[in-house]
Structure formats: structure tokens, C-alpha cells
Length: 317
Length: 220
Image (cartoon, rainbow over all chains, first blue to last red; front, side, top):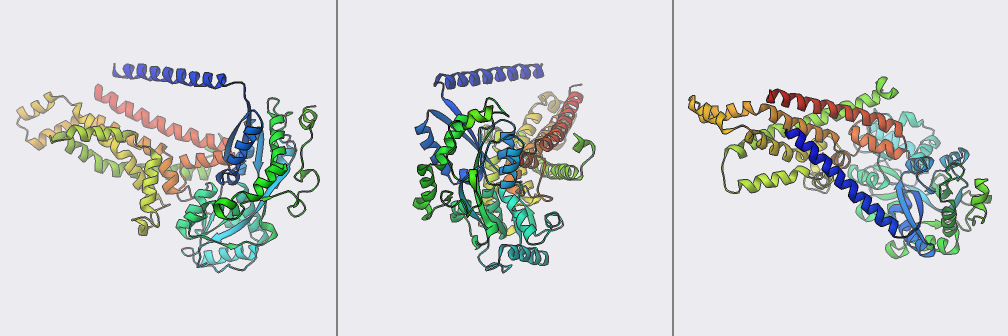
């Protein structure tokens, strides 16, 4: 008897929930037929609140509701592959090219860049200060193997753009990533979380980690970590926007994605990127791609240029 | 699916760790809460109702809140930071024990209340001492009390807040089923997530069947 009663009240609860959610959906529809732009972004643009500010300005320019979901570059691209986004903002050129080659993305537009840095405890137990990125990684591994309690490296371990770059750094240091990232290596900690939680974990463990300058600046006040390695071409970090192809998903909002890309590379958008952060932390968090295309390796069509009016209609054909 | 059928070593390892941590939390919580529940049930004191109400409110203690509080306590700059328990399985056990204790205490009290006064009266009339009477009631309520413990275990196994915030999802050390699912989803590896999800659901199902079976015997 008791079980049946529970079952009935459970059913009733589900009904109530369904009704309320249906009502909520109605409310949304009544707000008017606003267009929707779904952006799947990497965390650094989101955690620094830059995208929030851009969204607000963009929504003032067009009658559009921008919905942003953030995650590592891995999931950011996966969402678009599944048709759950109209535009991706990511930072891993290898997977960006694959996304386009696979037919999901239209084209890559670089709009901002910053640098990766190796951060660690101020007293630098592994003694990497002043080294090149490759030397630093090799030294962290050597010292970590010797003294796993004293020297630790915390990896994102989540297939994000930062994790992808970390693998490149191990590779440049002449080390095999697969051998570095074995559970036998107690000095190598795979966090499997976003940049913010990974920074906190590194802070708690008094270890080293790889981070982008923007996210580090946003979290710096909570951390005892300091930037130790900041120079080297391999540390360049370029952010690119890729609209989802209407050929892959006909219902994607390509026009609005194009508008957003054009806003990103417009003078207004690039100016905002150039000065964003000056007020809060005293220096800009990102650098605009405008005028720096050669430096950041975005040549030709990939350079911060406006997308043509017939960009989407050409793609549909 | 192949991952489960082929018993992928990583999957097996994560599953075993999940079970080990949840079982440890449940055993510790049971040692604490079953006597506590009994103490509250068998004693009449001022504010008993309020205590029971409070315990019931804590049933739905949000996992992330427990995670946050325990994180602050165990953090390097927190009061217990020197123990070095943050980002260890031990820290996760502490968090999960706190998380499931209210529901286990509350359900123990409910289980004991479910034993009719006739049992106690019979025991006393047969010449049982106070302790023997309590013992008899506990025996009568054993099925419901076991169900309480299994429910606590289910919650410990399926929660993600404490596991992520206290454990930190470190591969080969504190990565459990729930945090691995969160990670693999954020990696974009949906298939692997599903495989882990199926394992988690299967374990929950088995626990649920156990609860039902235990209760079924009780009613019989």
C-alpha cells in the first residue's frame, strides 16, 4: 500500500514539474520571436568575463538572445559537432582545422591572443626560472622524479586547448607524453578539471602548472603561485572563431554567427579586447589579433577580417 | 559497451575505487549514526522533536555545500590543512560521511519507530531488562535499518560534489565513477561517459534490489 501511495505522489510530482516547465517555455515564446545565437566557448574567454561584456554589447546591436556555454576546447568543439552550437570560440589550431576539414566548421577567424605561462611556487623548488619552456618541462620532470613530494606538475588532463599545448611542450622537451602521464609518476597529477580548479589544486599542492595569462590574471589574487616561464614562441595562444556550417546543420544560425564574428574583428570589438582588464587588474588580459596576424601565424583569410555578406548563402550551396 | 564487456582496466580501477570509498564512508557513517539514531529514539529529552526535524532537513544537504565546507576545512590555509587530506581518498571519505550521516540517522530513528509498542511490551512482560528490550526492538527493525545503510551507500556512491571538490578527480588516485563521467563529458568523449554511467546505474539498481529484498523479508 505504502509503495503505491509513493508511486502516485511521484507521478503527481512529475506532472506538476512538466506543467511548470511547459508554462515556463510558453513564457519564453511570448517574449517575442527573438533570434537565438548559441556560442560554445573555451573557458578562458568566459571566466575572465570578457565574453559577458561582448554579449551585452552584441545584444544591443542586434535583436538576439546570446546563450553561451563554456568548457574545455574538447567539449566546446564536441557540442558544435553534435549541432548544439552555432559558433565556437576555441584555441587549439590542430583540432580547429580538423573541425573544418570534417565539414562541421566554415572558416577560422583569429580574433585575439595571449600567452601560456608556466606558473609555480615563488621559491621555485625545481629551479626553472630563466629557462626556456622545453628546458623547464624537462627539469620539472627530472626534479619531480627525484623528489615527488617537493616538485609536482598538475595537468589539466581534460583534452582542453591548454592540455593540448602541454602535450606539445613535453614533445618539444624530447619527452614522450604517454610516458610522462603514467600513474607511476606520482609527481605528475592529472586534475581532469577546468583551469580555475586546476590552479587552485596547484596552489594547494604547491606545484607547477601550465596556464594562459588571462585566466591566471583573473585568479591571481586567490593564489600564492607566480609566473615563472613567460617567454618562448611555443607559448603563443591564439583564439579563433568558427561558425558552424549550415551544410552540416541546416538549422544553424549562420547569419548571426557571422554577425558575431564581424563584431569580434570590428574596430569596436578589437578595441574592447585591447583594453579589457585595464580597469580591474591594471593591464589588458588579451591582445587583439588586428595588426598582429603575422606574429600569431594567422595568414590570409584567417587574419582578423570581416566575413562577406554572402558568407552563409555560399556555404549552403 | 565494449569498454564494459572487455573490462577495460581503467574502468575496472575507477569502479573499484568508487566502491571502496563509498563503502568506507558508509561503514564509518553506520558506526556513528546507528547508535546515534538509537540514542535519540530510546531517550526522551527536551527538544527531541526539533532535533529530529533538523536531521530530516539535513537529508537533502546539498553535496556541493558539504564539498565547499570540507574543502575550506581541509585546505592548506584551513584549520585542518596540516593533515594534508585535501585531494586524497581520505578527504573524500570525510566529506561523504558528513553527507550521508543525516539521512542514515533519520532513517534509523524511523526504522526504530516503525516497531510497534507491542514488541517492547511483550519483551518486558517476558522479563526482559531495558537493554534486552532495546536489543529486541533493534532486531525487529534490522531490515529497515539495513535499508537506511544501503540508502546512505547509494547516496555516497552517486554524489559528485564532494568527490570533485575534495577528491579533485586526480587520475589513478581520486578519480571515481561520477567525476570520471563529468570529465569524459567535458572532454567530449560521450561514449566513455555512457559506459561509466551504465555501470553506475547498474550498481544503484543492485543496491535498490537489495533494499527491496531486505524489506520484502521484513514484511513477510
